[in-house]
Every structure is written in C-alpha cells, then in structure tokens.
Image (tube, one colour):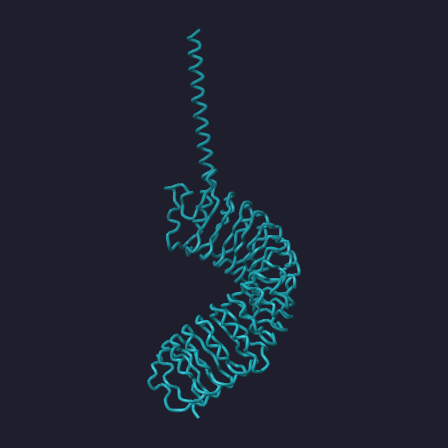
Length: 486
C-alpha cells in the first residue's frame, strides 16, 4: 500500500515538474514574443536613419533589452514601448511605417531633427497615442487624416515642416481631447472649415506661416479654453468673429500679415482680461485705438503696425505696467497737434519697455521732456516720419541699452544733445531730413558698433564730422551725409 502511494506521489511530482517546466517555457516564449513585438519595429525605425551624428542609436543593439535603449521608454507593467523621445538629435532619414506596430505607444517626440518623407499613415493605428510632436523637421506630403482614430490624442505638433494640402479638420474634429494643434511654418492651403469648432478642448491653435485663405469660421468662438491663437502670415480675410474676442481664456492673438479688416472691438480689454500678446500688424484694421485695452493688465506686447487705426493713443496706456513691446507705426494716429504725445508720460510706468515705435503717423508737437524717463531697458526707439518739431530733449543718454534710434523726416531743430555720447551700444542712428544744426562733436565716439548712420539733409555746421570720432568704419554699412552742412 505504501509502495503504491509512494509510486503515485512520485508520478504526480514528476508530472508537476513537467507541467511547471512547460509553463515556464511557455511564459518565456510569450515574453520573448512580446519583446520581439516591439523590438523589431524599433530596429526597422533605426534602419531608416542614415545619419546619427551624436551616436544616439548606438545603444540600439542586441546587447541589452530594448527598453534600455536611448530614447525608448517602456511601461512598468507589460514592458511595452510607450514613448519614443529623440528630440534635438540631428537625425536624418525617414520615419519607418513600422512604428505603427508599436501598439502601446503614447508619446512620439521627434522634434528638431532632419526627418524627411511623409508622415506614416500607419500612425493612425496607434490607438493609445496622446502626443505626436514632429515639429522642426523636413517632412512633406499631407497630414494623415486617419489620425482621427487616435481618440486619446492631446497634442499634435507638426510645425516647421514642408507639409502641404488642406488641413483634414473634418476628420480630425473627432479628436475631442485635443488640446494642442500646432501646424505653423508649413505650406498648407485651403480654408479653415467650420468643423474646427468641434475641437472643443483646444488650448493652443497655431496656423501661422502657411497659405490658408478665406475667413475665420464663426464656430471658432466655441473654444472655451483657447489660450493661444496664431494665424499670422497667411491669406486670411474678412472680419475676425466677435466671439473670438469674447473668449476670456485667450492670452495670445496673433493674426499679423493677413487681409483682415474692420474695427478692433472697443471692449476687448474687458472681454480679454488675460491677454498678454496682441499682434494684428499688416492688415486693414481701422477705427480707433480700443481704450479698454488698459484693463488687460497683463499685456506685454502690442503690435498694431501697418493698419489704418486713427485717433489718439489712450493717455493711460502706461497702466499696462508689464508692457515690453509697443509698435504703432504706419497708422493714422495723432492729429498733428501739441498734445499728441501726452500719453508718453504714462509709459514711464512701464519699466520693462524695450521696443517703442511711433514711426509714420501724424504725431505733432514736441518730443516731451518726460521721454527721457522711459525705461532704461529700451533697445529700439522709432519716432521717424511724423510732424514732430522743436528740439531733441536732454536725457536720451539715459537709454544706455539703446541699439536703434530713428528720428528721421520730422521738423526737429537745434543741436544734438551732448549726452548722446553715452549711447555706446548704438548700431543704427537715423536723423535725416530734419532741420538739425550746430556742430556734430564727438557724440559718436563710443558707438563702436555703429553700422547704419544717416545724417543727411540737415543744417549742421563745421568741418569733418569724423574729427576725433572713433567709429569703426569697417563695420559701417550705410553712411549718408548729403546736404549735411549749411
């Protein structure tokens, strides 16, 4: 009896060993198969790279598990590839369609390389994909419409490539979770369809530097979370829908160099309280400067240049204490009257102001003395082509960081203040077509980086202006002295 039991137990133990060995072998085989499932597409990806100047892919070999390869990230649970991150590596080649077999992939980030060819259609099979960032490469062809199957997508960034054709918004509008959609700096054409309003989660939409045309659809006002909207340098036209100016989350509106017209809403400073950048230059906007803009207290940059905006600049513009960039050139501002530049007094509150341009308008009167109290962070000051008269006030020497100064084509008279000699960083100085007089003493002694100097058509006195002046003429690219003296 005991012999039978012992024999039976021995048989059972043997069977268990066989079963366990089979199970381990099966698991090992399954694991090996699982490894190969992702390893092989990665090796195919590597095959398409013909230049790897930093040796980033040297680790992509059989000496270690592919989850340890540079730029590859695997999930902890299944050891499947979930991220491919090879940014700023100067890789050259095409993107292998085999990458579409990495079925657990969530993040593809290949920005700032030299990939060319088309975006693989197979990316539409990556149903878990959340981020596709291929910006700053040389990719061509069309945007794959079948990215619509990537329903988890949050970020599509394809800016800075050579993509062409229409934006497949009708298909991609299915991406309800999409927050970032950056397509700038491509060759995209066509109109922006109304179905773009279905991308209800959008936070950033960048379409600048393409060839898009037509008007902006009213449905863009449906974006309740939109913070950044950039469509500069296209062929867009019409009136910007009022609903866009009612989206309180917006921080950036950049639509420069298009064909938009109409007035800027007078209440935009109230409806856009979080606005930081307003760039509408190079359009056909008219009407007056929206005085409510001072309510958007976080504004850092205003560019209204090259439009037809008229009237006076708000006297309290300096309430925008964070202002760094103010460009109003080539408009119809001012009335050739003595109070046109009164608003400059308020700008003394803007301690970070670095670029300030009023060129080519109708500003009259004198340059106010308070101008000298503007931020010493100024690097560029343009007041040319207006109706300004009187003398240049003392105090410009306070602008120790000034690089570019333009006062041309006005009716300025008198001498150039001696404190101009403090402007050591000047590279451009333009005074032509005024009535400036007196001797040009060595105010330019320390401006050793000056490369553009125009003093022509004034009433200066004396002899050679370069006596004791130490300008490095090898740097000077433009020197105009016609009719310099009386």
